[in-house]
Image (cartoon, rainbow, N blue to C red; front, top):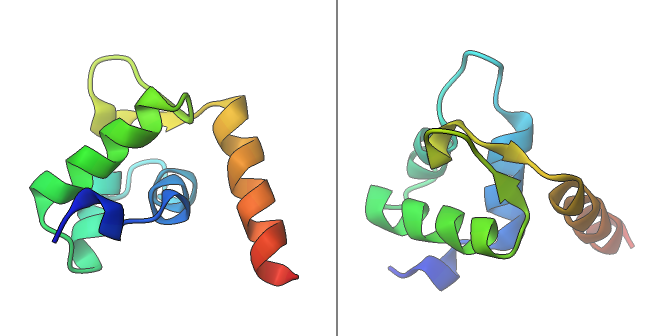
Length: 80
């Protein structure tokens, strides 16, 4: 399994949909069957694209406005 197996939408949804004190995005992706190392690589990919921002830890990050727009665009495309 490689990071390309995890879509941008999956990563961004893991950040958007997690409860405030719920599981980390990594755990959400791992529940879908992705290894932790692959999940982190996909999260880093989206951070480099400017879709995720974080303070101390990538797993405790949040979507940037650019990330929110990208996820909205993807979801609009999926619903068409």
